[in-house]
Image (tube, rainbow, N blue to C red; front, side, top):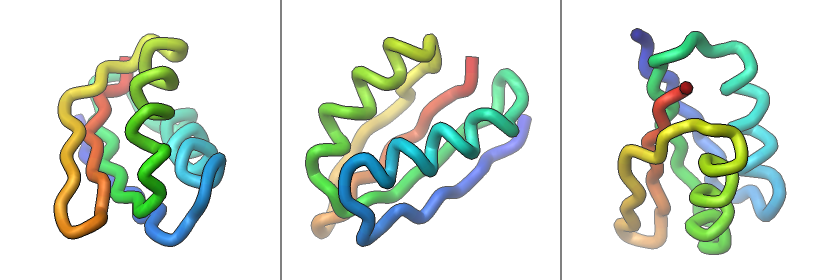
Amino acid sequence: MAEIKINARGLQCPGPIVQLFKEAKTCACGDILCIEVTDHGFKKDIASWCKKTNNILLSLDEENGVVKARIKKA
């Protein structure tokens, strides 16, 4: 199981989700994707994306204007 870090800071919708989607395509089941974004709309988008793609949202936090999500590839 690998942990993949994605820096999508400064990107606006749909940029962060697009980067996440590209990385997720190359990951194995069980890998953890850790993404950091500054687009606050991402909080709503990531929950929907995980549900739609059957991936698991492990955590979603915000600190100092940066939204951090950890997703387990299903």
